[in-house]
Structure formats: C-alpha cells, structure tokens
Length: 184
Image (cartoon, rainbow, N blue to C red):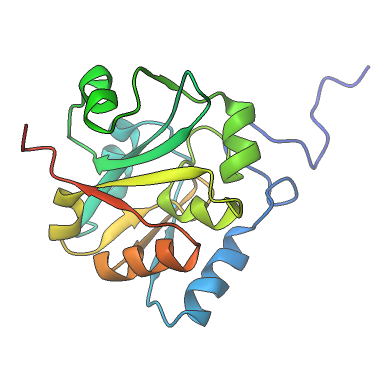
C-alpha cells in the first residue's frame, strides 16, 4: 500500500489543476477575454485571513473572506466580505430572507463552485453554470480600490477593479446582491 498521494490527488495545500473544472489559467484567460485587467501574485497556500495577512506584504486594495452558505431548503449563497468584517449568520440569514444559514460542505462547494475549502472566491462563480449560488457582496470591498481574491486556488492572489469584479460576476450569469453591512 502506497502512503503517498497519487500525483493528481488534491493535497491539503492547494487544489491540483487536474481536479478543478476550471484551472486558474483558464480563469485568467476568461478575464482577458472580457477585457478585465488583473494582476496575479503566487505565494504559499493560505487557509485563513491571518495567514493571508502574514504572507501578503503590501498588496493595496480590499482583502476579502468568502463564506459559502446554504439554508435548510438547499439554496446557496456566496457571501464576499471585507476580511475584517464580523458577521452574525443568524442576522444575515434573516436580512437575506434565507432563514437559518449553515456552511456548505466541501462536496457541495466542489460541485457548485469547483473549488476546495481555503480557495473560495467570487471568481469561482465561473463554475456555477446553473446559477444556483447567489452572490452577496459587501459594499465596503467595492469602495477600497482593487479587490484581492484567489483565482480558484489558494496559492495565488489576483487583484481586479471592483467594477470589473461585478462585471465578471454578471458575465457568469449572476446578479450580485450588494449589501451594506454597516446598516441594520
């Protein structure tokens, strides 16, 4: 019995492009097709906001965290927040008319957004061709210069302009809900 993973198996560090429905390179090519300027940087894989803060150095703009959520009826949301934003999931569920939220499983995440835990990103909406995931965007990140997000793996960061992020989401067939979390 071989204890080492096969070359195409996912590792805890990052997703192998062989298992992702869309590779980071395909995503970046799609951004280019849409005329969306972007700047990408490779780094060690990160799984938490704290790790990202330690590694990133002086990348300007908004830094985000992403919550893949579902309710009891099986509806799904991708909530994109400023990395320092605290959120009450019960209040958020009420505000969005969703009821009680729970986190989506890794299997559901892969099935609908085509990424592994730790690599959740608004750019993963490229894989939600059925339009089953509702994006919710924190207005704060749209006011902070470029938005820094993972391009489908957690070993890179890609910066794009806020308006271009919204344009990309719409090009993926989604209408993002913009939420001001500073308001009740």
